[in-house]
Length: 150
Image (cartoon, rainbow, N blue to C red):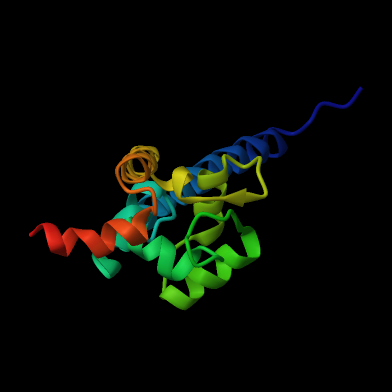
């Protein structure tokens, strides 16, 4: 039964230490890159994307309706391919796939404005319900009558 020379044993330990150092360095570089990209939402997280939309278009809702949503009203769900094309069209150079995964929680095939901001969509729903209570013709009738009231 032959014993393993001591130089052979130390190579394995040295390799393991180098591997751990490489993993730590990779983690550190990834963290620095994320911090650098997160200036205007380019890291691919939802809060940063909200900041990008607000900075570029004035509001998230306006940006979603004009650039992302496939329908004119901005309420239809957006598929992944449409979402990626919209990000390219807007000039969003961040991590689109990680943003998509965060918006859809990695489980759905589509997303909508509610995935971006739940409070905003609840507020818009309440506004629409209030408009339909007061103005039977909906938003169009409200828009026509508001200037008359001032």
